[in-house]
Length: 218
Image (cartoon, rainbow, N blue to C red; front, side):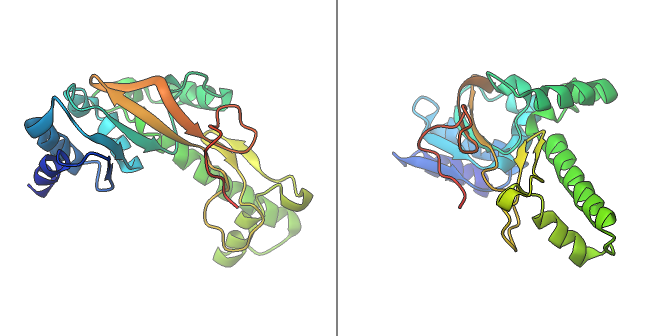
């Protein structure tokens, strides 16, 4: 397949190989291509956040013990952080209690962070609607969009909130589609699984986990 060929071709690069395609089904084929050709000297691979789907499917990703890589995560399970915030630990404890299959190797998806991302997205919408209801504004697509932009501490608004995946603050800028300084973690995968060791975190200004070289949203 093309993904296998791409993996084999990646062996020819001395720098960073950026994987920006699908986590499933393409990434396993890409890794196999790397392993088939240069498992003893694999390139440095940095994969996009969609690879969290591959990592979360432990039946597939656990078989990869030869090719280490790093990948981006916008929502990180507590076991992949050396000092997880209480919001994350509490959320996943409730998630595992309500849906025990989340902890199983064949159906569990906690490691991809999608449950936490969905929770914060839904709560942000609920919060925006509550602002409209409080102010007596009609609720429709346009007003909810504007209310989402008001979820911020900018100009003394004090409307941001600390979500499971990090602070949610749209910065007070009209048209912004994502929160400012949203935490991103670069997670190391080696020996068949992700690890909480040597991970890199870029979060907000003043966050003790943030590396000094991390870029910040303006």
